[in-house]
Image (cartoon, rainbow, N blue to C red; front, side, top):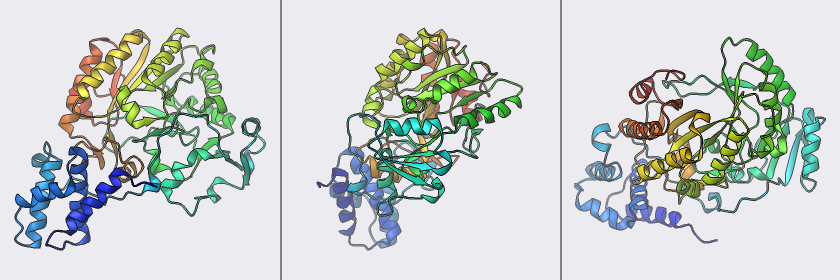
Length: 461
């Protein structure tokens, strides 16, 4: 197996540090190696050349002064826009760990076909269970007492390697507890009153930024068979609500990527057609054409996460193209549905304005603005633990190359001023096509909503 270029780069960064005349402790070596690796990757400069330049500009009279001087010099290079204003404390510099076995190999989209299916004892008699087993006659069938007793089925491999093979394992379960909950907003952010229907866990797509990479505790995709129990729980839940609410299924899985297998969407659309609530089905697929003839009565919004095609190509592997997503949205509008769009995550780059202004144009050039139920804006943000996972699984991705700081909610984010600039421009571009579309921010504090949108809650226009 050939060594990945980024693995070679990491070894070169470590070697460059080891050649210094001072011996640094493991923590100091880790931070310097991290900075040299990231700058070398972003700027396409050899690690030894970078360190040579750094030593020329730094005070190397003693080990202590050498470390402080080198670190400060490298921090200024790595974070030129934010170093002086934010200080050292907010920069996250974990150990870089790369392993060839964990790297995701790019492949063409293919039919979903698991090699083994785990069936919980309490889920074996459902009609949906039998339908799914019939669809995959070549899959190995494994009866289990409970998914909780399975743990990491692949004990000999790393957690990441297990996650890489998740589409090979399908878990058919009976959900007993975790049905509906409020959208899990970060602390101090302004929520949008969203509720999540936890109808399955896991995704067949390979998005470099997906939070499920660190959230998953099962090396497989989990599908509940007891959809009727979800509808019963919804009955009681909605009876307690005095105002209409939004409920979505796209938090822990793509709402429609496997719907040809589960049939969840049809059941939910029919259910919500007679309820005082709105269902949102959020997807990166174009799997909507089987839903066009349903009598939804305007109670279902089908929405898409959208990004420029350049970012879809680089960081949303196996998903459908932007053009296919917009064609699917147009078909839904023709069938009477309202649609939604989530510009999330907005990924900063040197030419981000060109890319996203064109994206906004593409959306409104294809879509009737009067049929858009809502638009969300959210910049790239993630838990600190996800940084190493993205590096390990997608070392070639440039998504981490920008200046990401530990933010108010302990997540890595772009600087607040940079986020405001992005949101303000996006909002201006959207308003040039639609004065009335409902626009809101995702995972941002109240002051950002006020400054960008002039409002402090979801439904204020």
